[in-house]
Image (cartoon, rainbow, N blue to C red; front, top):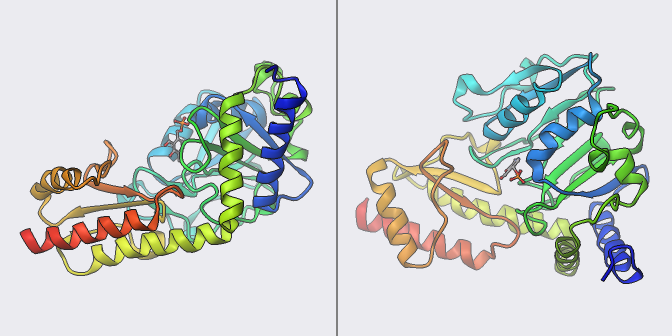
Length: 322
Ligand SMILES: Cc1ncc(COP(=O)(O)O)c(C=O)c1O
């Protein structure tokens, strides 16, 4: 099946239209289906949006923001408008303390920090400076207002589809800023012009993403996902907060609904929690290797029954060892 043929084009167009509808995307935003994961965007963003002598603001909120910053620094001057480093990335820097530049080419945030389990309760006001977000781990988990952003990108592997596929949503007026040396297949303007088909796109991944979009639509869209994800994360946080047996270092208003990071008051029990959990089919609960402890990732594909099983196990584990 040639990717330029009618059959694939109709698969592609249906996927893109479904995504546009799910996001209620205004007409002046373009959806690009790119390759290379979110990490490729850490470099492609400055190449496409940051002039050689320009400056970009980044908010350092945790592991992934730091990765984005260190990569962007290879391409230009990056200023850290705010950092949670002083709090061990256990909470977001207070928006009143942010030092946003008015001359920045863009301001980059990571609305959900997958590794340390932080989520922005509110978006910053950046005025004329385009707000850019790495939404890899929160995309499609609830509705969001794209008009607040100049550009949003997301690796597909959490809530979209197979790894490698990367969605970039960009406001049309930002398409013309790429540096001349940006590789053609990674130039947003060129991809926008050619319907993301400068070269062979990730055909099978796009097909699968289209099925995910169709599923989301049939389940009630992003409003329904937000309800479910709210219930799922609340159930786990409620159990964590019940007494001092479990703990979560993140203040409630900054807690992620996608990645619930927690630990046990007695860290020596964490290995036991993981092994006993695994024997009951509760797997992948180990924390990110930078932050350790435990983490329950509750992406859209995790059913509420899976969360109920985890909470039940947490109750029993406390009864055994508390
Ligand atoms: C917030 C965030 N940004 C970037 C990445 C890196 O994504 P990729 O592996 O697609 O490069 C991840 C991966 O989990 C992530 O959670």
